[in-house]
Amino acid sequence: MGHHHHHHMKRKHIKSLIEKIPTAKPELFAYPLDWSIVDSILMERRIRPWINKKIIEYIGEEEATLVDFVCSKVMAHSSPQSILDDVAMVLDEEAEVFIVKMWRLLIYETEAKKIGLVK
Image (cartoon, rainbow, N blue to C red; front, side, top):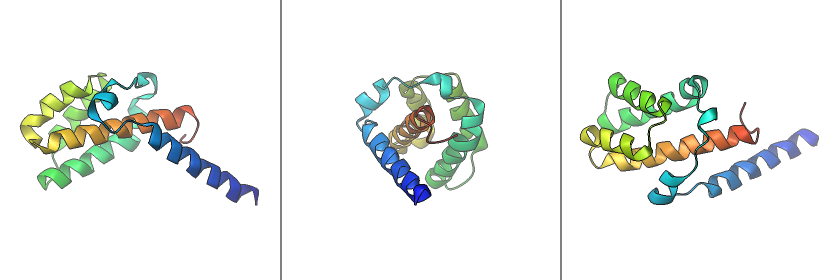
């Protein structure tokens, strides 16, 4: 019984965490992201694969240079708006959706790590 209960709690935490993350761009971009948690391990394990998958969806093929570029911008703690400006040339109108989703993912991963949802 105990194990199942714990799992349910975790799901509830995830749900409330996701609800806490802003969806509107101004609020989202102003969100105080905890950069101390954004390390290369998080990038390689969670963020990079996601970015890669999205870029393939948008462009129709792997674009390693772009993926590297976005990852390095994130690792350099760039503002979401500056990353958006940079990828807008390549992704056009998809750029904003992409960066908004990526930023929500970043916030989710950092907050989840803080409260111990993900190791």
